[in-house]
Length: 201
Image 1 (tube, helix red, strand yellow):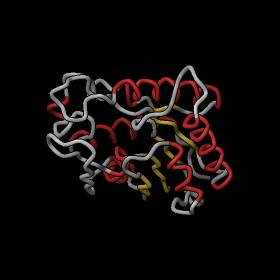
Image 2 (image 1 turned 180 degrees about the horizontal axis):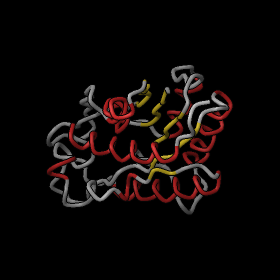
Image 3 (image 1 turned 90 degrees about the vertical axis):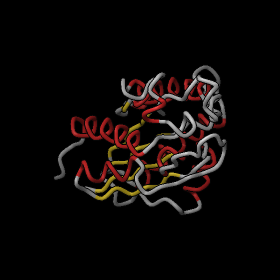
Image 4 (image 1 turned 120 degrees about the vertical axis):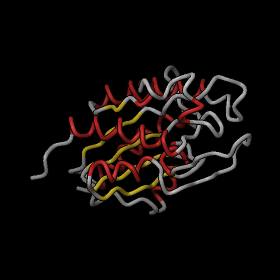
């Protein structure tokens, strides 16, 4: 079993920096790291800090992402904005095109759409301000999963990653996870994958 995780800093494993905004602090123990251990399989981490759907699509088309041998592809984008639940946007279209690319390149892989996790609305955290665009991305991902009949892993609803828990799971900046936060995120993904993955032939 091989899994491929596509996304932004929350996939790459950015822990954030206390009191800072826009400074990457990528660590090995992001959610793909823990997911590999829970699943007991190979997990490829194709996360890129700061990427929107459009920049990730370009990155994909430049050949930096290889999903051809993946049994499942997990797509979690939208934290960096541009998606809309009500308007047709470039980011919406790029997200849909990215799904098409994955279907083309890995026709036997199961594709899972993931909503981004909660982003803080508490101004004491340095990355406060992402919540409105995260909420739009969540609504769009849910609608796109329904439209394309793809399984959705709704990280946004995880009861452990909610307002008031930033001190535990997002304690550097209110957006990026701690090691414990990424572990909890991976646990949610693992639980959902175990229910939905098709057995290998």
